[in-house]
Image (cartoon, rainbow, N blue to C red):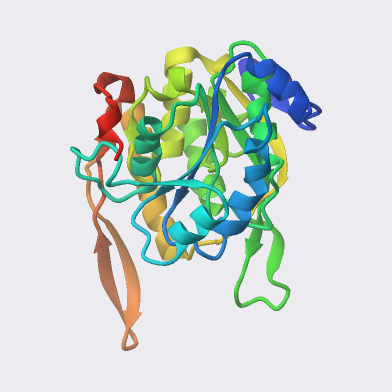
Length: 317
């Protein structure tokens, strides 16, 4: 790694977080904490995740002031299960209703900024299996305890969960897009970010000051976009990372990962001031024993920094 990255890694990486929940509550000093779970048809996992986080919202001095499930158009029982387990739920159509929603994870993360009032916002994916509630205090630690930190990325070991495997999972192998696309891209475009263990991980936290000041890619490019925008606007030292142990979630097939990779590449090129043709991704599938092309369009939609909008209470139904 570059010397600047080695120095950053030594100072801004917490391999074994040792702060307690009480430490964090004392360090809040009037700041509000929101936890946001972006969700789309996650009835199998959302209940356990909400139930695991809910104790942090209880008591006279809670660590978490607002637990929000931000729904992206679920058609299963995600919403009902989330509410039954104690979360507040907002629909993407209820937040900034004067703006028609577009598909994508980044879209609901962006809208969640208008649906919450936390000074610190923690994002947790809703498809996690065997969820560890300790993710939340671990991610909040550097933001509440260390000066100058605005974005905290979680990192972890990621087993590859294979439905065809009798054992259920391989010990390593998750994060295929990270290793095959994101890490090589960052090495080529922003090598000072080579020390980020999980640049695409869905578990991270940031200050409202940062999150409202940067644009959001509405697609799966949202995480790499936030990372690149943070280092561009605030410098490498504004980023920290924390070891969360093990993360298990629903692994996607290679076709879906290809589309995700195309979106991530487009966002990274755009953030680096480099051209992208905007062309669709062509993949090949077998139909009747023949290989035929299947093209999937790239969604280039970006939402502007939230602070550029005039937010009023009636924008959240």
